[in-house]
Image (cartoon, rainbow, N blue to C red):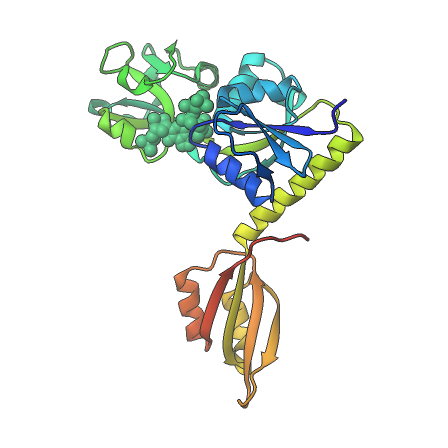
Amino acid sequence: MSSRIRIAVQKRGRISDRSIQLLSDCGLVFETNTQALYLKADQFPLDVMLVRDDDIPNYIFDGVCDLGIVGTNVLLEKVLEKNQPADSLYEEVKKMGFGYCRLSIAVPKEFAGKTDLSFLNGKRIATSYPKILEKFLRDNKIESKVIPIHGAVEITPALQIADAICDLVSSGETLRSNGLVEFKTVLECESVLIRTKKALNDAQITASTRLLQRISGVQLANQTKYIMMNAPASALKRIQSVLPGMENPSVIPLQGTDNRVAIHAVARENIFWETMEQLKEAGASSILVLPIEKVIQ
Ligand code: PRT
Ligand code: ZN
């Protein structure tokens, strides 16, 4: 049995760059062959399979790959195709923080303002997600005809192949440019890291634990900032109330001043301009916010 682990990521598309970027932020270095179907990490027992996103869930269900990064839309469709409980097929390890979109039913704009689901009774709905849509309709006791279609779903109403569509939306621009409006959200989607239910050997468990620790470290670093400022010592309490995520700040006396201090802290939240303005109002000056590259806890 191999001691390496295999992760499936999208080869080319909306979530491929972020997935590969995350792995390289984890310190993994790959051979740069853009035609390759898999990338072998240097100095780490990990192989990356580059595949179509639709193939990722089954690779995980069948144990062909140990880990995978995929949208919850594709994942749920494949789980419903299998007709088995989700927890017998895979385990969700963590949310990736990218690939956000929604699977929505959309109708031609002349029906804008319709909100009642019963409007869909007897209508034809084209989609690349027939299993998810069928379940949604069944759960809501709506009888529509589901038309499975691959790609370019949004043009089907204009071609009079369908009366409505069920497709992924992010900005909504594609719907607008095809004369469609959103009618109902079926599923909020994002990318997730999933793991096979197949047993791994000890070496693979060690490798996947290391990888997951690095991924958590990268995610934590992305959400964490290092903040430095100067302030009168008396302003410390007010400053901490502006930044509740600021844990155990270092407070260092500033030489040559009476009671001014430098405050250094790790903030476990994003720091916006508004927060910096509030810090200034609380008495802080020379406020610096720095990114943190890596964290291990
Ligand atoms: O070739 P392969 O099968 O691997 O890729 P694919 O073409 O099936 O998928 P891809 O790369 O388009 O999307 C991969 C995943 O990204 C999806 O499964 C979702 O989980 C996620 N995602 C996030 C999106 C979008 N946002 C998105 N906007 N997937 C598709 N879209 C489409 C949308 O349907 C519309 O056609 O992008 C177009 C632009 O959207 P608007 O609303 O911004 O106009
Ligand atoms: Zn796909």
